[in-house]
Length: 150
Image (tube, rainbow, N blue to C red; front, side, top):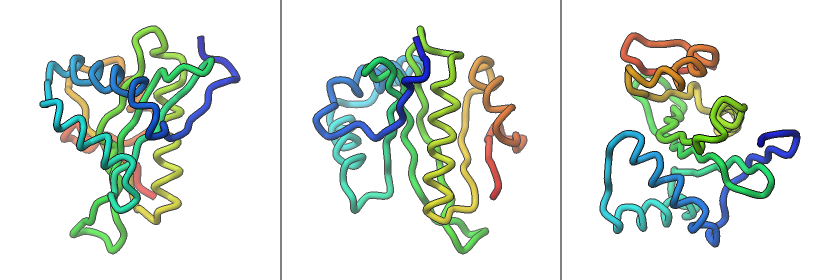
């Protein structure tokens, strides 16, 4: 499914119908729900240049197969911002084929360009598939928080 055609780019404002099933898939994976108005506000924030929130999509064969949401935030520990990779989701049939890694690496590039000193993220302890990837890409903090220092 994923080949040399993997493309990482922000989904445009007109691509909500492609993005939303992945967002809902992420929520379902974590057995969570948010009200529809929260999803509406999230989509607006992801496309508002005044917001510190961003979205990237992984596309293969022209189809959106993965998403990542990230944001920049202040820290008491550094002058520059941190980058929090908040949500990462790849459709089931594409897992293990490189889209998740590509999305994380794209967030890392964005964080470096922003001047952030680290990217960090969380996952559930029993998310073994994701943790196998995360353990290759970042350091585990002891809080099941993954971060990559720059």
